[in-house]
Image (cartoon, rainbow, N blue to C red; front, side, top):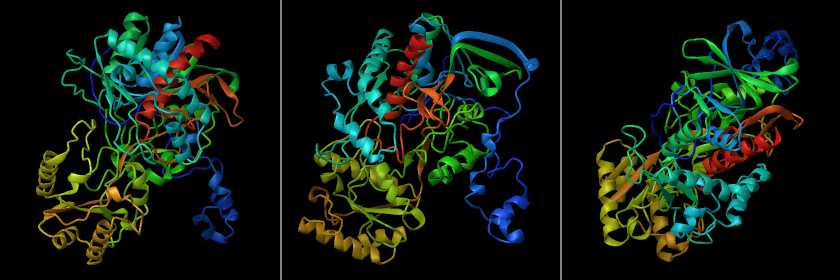
Length: 588
């Protein structure tokens, strides 16, 4: 099929295309096979019908609907069989990197994708170092930055994968830079959020992206700025695969089932996809089938099972509708986890770390700089200060999730920008200093307040701001206390650094409330070894089956911190994709 060229995105690191079958099984609750209500009742420790209403340790172990495989698609329904050395399912960054790497190693490669074109979201690709860093004067990212990330995730990650990235990301990113430069594109570096060198939350400059360099975008109307640059990369990866390396991409193919030989005990040899006309095609991988199907955030049951902490932040319209396979950047969820389901159906185990890691946060309230939290005064619903505000945003959002009604309020004054850098966009390039910064910041705050949303307010006095926000009178006492601490130069309550303590006293005054979580995606999935082979519950590799990208298990845990810019794209998609294609060529 012809390579289609269209689309764009934005956002922080989400991969690929997946496959959601029409036969996907997702009920609204755990479902037991063969369990009767009488049996459940007898395990509950309660007599009669009351036992039906309670879960127990035993009933909690029942299979969920999504774990139960549908009936096999009959061979008689398969209209066409297509063979290659490697079949990749998904046409995002990870799938395309794997396909290109395998093809450059001499293998015959095809991609089957549910989308109509190459897909991507965001544009930050992490590397420890690369030629672009060297040329633009950025240092190598120290090992301690990655060790800090492992620590922040309480060591509930597979360190072998982190050091695999650390040891190989420079080679993989240099390959990507060479590809893009040869195609005439420019290379951008996403600037990290400024902070002191010894800050616990320092985010170093470590992400590579691309720019048009005067060229026409591959898709009409495509916006390409720092942080939104991945469409250029996936389009060039697709072009390189099909035009230079002889690979093929079959779009509008929704993967529904894997075929594993010997009654689901042998090798995974093929994937069956439903095509646009309703017919089925079987893609046979002589050496490997590689799943690169993205996340499972659009499946309500999978989120309840594996990521209950943030399941409610996915939009109902995402849960209740078919996915947009071409989706770019969007809050609220993405795909249905079909790759993960297909793996489970042929004997794969789930990753060990629980719950799965969420990418997203409460982005606010108050002025901030890109990934940082608001560094002024934060209050809860009751007008009480609740944290040391000097924190990176995604981690600060964990505090907000614990607040009454999950509402946080920021109060600041017109002088805030005199002391704290303010940006909020994807580049950090808009940061200014001095009077210019204050004037620009105050103008933007006034504009936000005039929008009349009710969550963002401005007034001549702090008392009016508190009233407009609907906070109780206790909030005024909290502001008074904060001002006293600021003037004393010591935060005796939460021990925030003196450099971030500034009295709120220069009008006009501003306030903002947030109670919305910007859910982006969920990380991880199938049990995966260091070679990206999908494994069973005994950690044995399932022959012939690999996965790459967002769905790789045990890379992230808890909260995606954003302290390592572009960690997901750079690690699970670029580095792991690059290495996986080579590994298959050398070992299968």
